Length: 349
Image 1: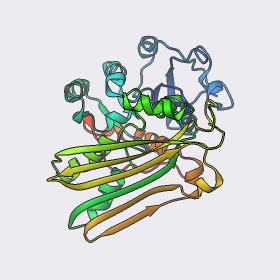
Image 2: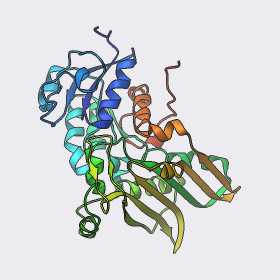
Image 3: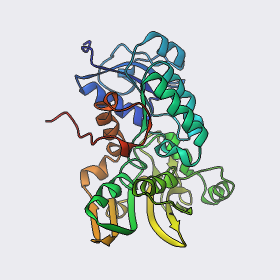
């Protein structure tokens, strides 16, 4: 059935997160997908509805040609779920801006791109303002649990001395790009060497999350330090997405400690652990988010939920869907998620 015109959306990336976004958009009568782009040869030319298991064809064939999509379709928003690094996602953002589209991306480095890519960030900001559109990153981490939530919670304090933030999560629902960043399924020693050489990145966005918090509080950090450790499995596992087999002695997760430092004092500390295919015992460790604030007053917030633990992808997808409702009404330019109003869901049961 043809959906009535609503907010017109182009999907740039139809992997694990792009597919979940497509399914959620399809449920919303106020939103309509008009184009889909992906470089995966296995889905090129196929109907989007078939590929993402909507249950019916929707008349949108996936193509690997962005020019074809942007020239043939007038859209309000482009959602980019491909790539993680600013330098890789910038050409996609630029093309969407040129088409007059607002841009929502889940690329982790776009959460606070000014720290590593000031020149590209300036270009995106100027290009977006010229076309009167908005570019913003959102997602779970970075984008919500370890950065926006602590900033939001800090509004209940007179003053703050330090943030301690903890997160443990199941990465099983995520796509191949995330798995490649972690070295999932590869021998532990091989990945240790790749990590030392900078050939695998593990989780991307730790520095961005810490700088996002510091910027919101007006803190001028002297440095950000990040320690990365890989985790090896002692049992065989297999990922839900792409069915990656993980043999004993291979990488199945990570732990990262990030510290924002000023005058030799740690003001922000983030302890983040992620793994795939958790055992029953490991599932008991899953914590959605925990924030300790040392200040006046001291605060401790803990968020958990069995439903969320079982559907970790929701933390990335729901913020994207909810942002669709407001992005056309905010000021143009490259913005952080903290510069936007709160955007709860518009749909109810």
